[in-house]
Length: 384
Image (cartoon, rainbow, N blue to C red; front, side, top):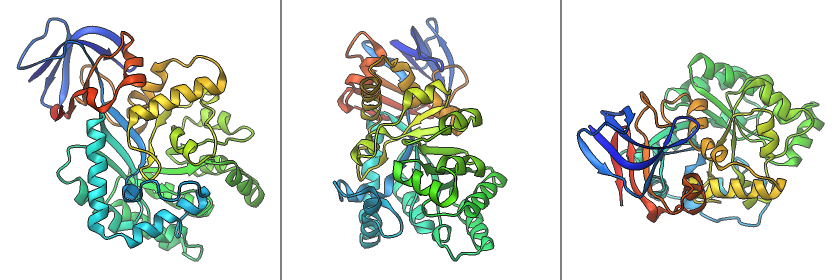
């Protein structure tokens, strides 16, 4: 057993600030109260105890290509199969890719992230590389794979379905680059196959305006319409919605992962976060490609909060942003973490309190040196 005492605790899905203790037994939070005090005692005086962070969208593989292609058009950098990142990944020895991914995962842990969702390039070999890299690192990975046949215009439907089934034996779902590379039929097959296997189907949509216009021109529908018709479980980006896109996403209750720093780095825009909230879309946060951004969710939250306030010239509550990196993500991904309450998995971070406003202290001021301890599945996995 572990008791964390003398801290300000962000309790429940709405992050209510309480002066209380937290009791952990095995991998679960079993009691949150001022009276409990059992087992190993962690004195968290002067600290904030909060759910650890969930990075809901990352491309970990391009950790080996940091800042390559800066200033080039997004298609030239990341469009498969011959974008700059894909060429670098093909030309780099596997050992270097593994070492770079290990470095990124260790960095995530020391900045409070204990779960990440990886869009995994490289088919079966790419999944094997991540398995090797993560073998001794105590972080939860949710791996969304893909196969070369998905973007092959000549691939038969039966081939796509067969390869989708095969890839799903090795990962947690399928993550697709976008509708610029796949057909509506391929999207439908992948979603149906994932659903039958109880796996996640996800796709990039509306990352920038041109691909939305191209989709309308070629198919008479936006990328968002096509994604909703295919019935994907999880959307990524939605930076450039058109017409009724946001209204329809809100009605569908499909969650969306925001990657605002990536959008900024690639000069493709600022996601309309306030309108998304108005349409009651469940919003998550991800750091996207390590090629563009450090996998630091504190930096992602700070950028999200400030750029949204600046864009709309109005207040956005920090709790809304913090939930995107914790409880919103846990709910969307179907994992029993993301908040501190009885019965939840004990994924927790203990962070030095820098200001008297706990949420702003976390979002606005926390750096890796302020991280005191990180707990994953009830076990201390990082200690400064």
